[in-house]
Length: 137
Image (cartoon, rainbow, N blue to C red; front, side, top):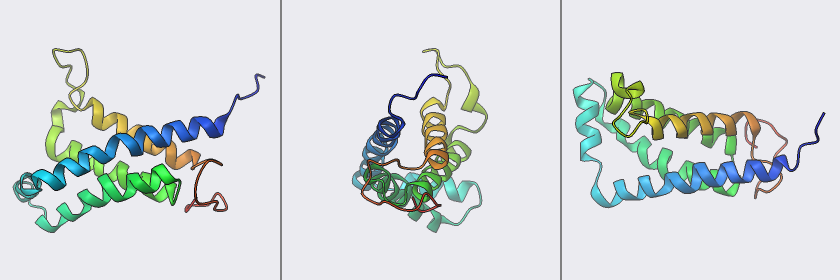
């Protein structure tokens, strides 16, 4: 069997990818507002206050992921946020091939799957919080 080179460095790079690339999406919504999210929620018959999960799932949780603090729970929050975006925005177009050759919800699926990977892997040793590899690590 080949020895793993540095799985903790791989986890750090995954955390930087998910956390670092998600934060600008949340900041853009803070700058430009969340009204369009409220409209989408209302159209689906969901309570509009659910929009409050967006700053948590796109800013707070990604910052925690970057720092390696509560990585597993934060990753689940990002994953749930992506499930909601697929449900609210893409629906049947999620797996539609676009004219560029990608899937309709390619970015959402990327964040969903990579955040789930982080949930299963944990934060690794390059993190601020050194939990006991439980749900909070």
